[in-house]
Length: 115
Length: 113
Picture 1 (cartoon, each protein chain N blue to C red):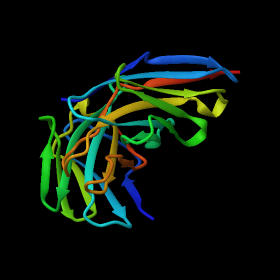
Picture 2: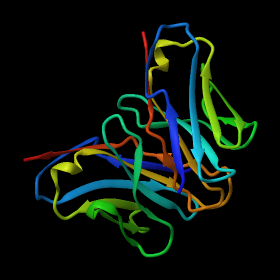
Picture 3: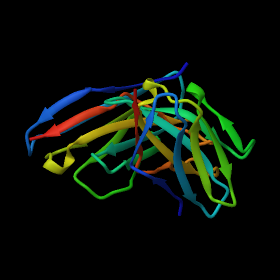
């Protein structure tokens, strides 16, 4: 079975500060990992994905994440927070292998950006 | 390009009333389709998924059902709503055998009173 754990349901940073959102995964097979962002009352938008190529993945809006197998982590970072980054962020895991593979989500981290 | 649409965006229903949420995907064929529910503070819960017309897999036993009458149409239904059915419902799709990412609709906010 696969799972993800997002440490910290709420994170607050100042505008211009580093954003670090933590995600640890559990998977018995090589995982595919994703970060999604959700703005209030909207669907989820894919930020970036790791699919066994480069371990440092760059996404939209200046975000990036690094896959660390030894730590079973896939933390999301952004060097300088912007007010527009305030949203909820979800980490998710799946594995490649068939039509019925499901995406398993973490419980989300709500990011607040203070002026 | 592919698009996904859900409707209605918002609805308020009394306990015991029926429910029908619809989702359609355009610009692709034979997608995998998914219904998720997002309740406050509980992340995303997978309710149903479908790999083809008439093929529905249920993840959580509950008061809801799903149907896929056409290749790119996915419907979430209930005969009698419960208070606990309130939440934000998200439809999603992905291509078969791709790298696994889902593409989500705009969501439907259901409040059961």
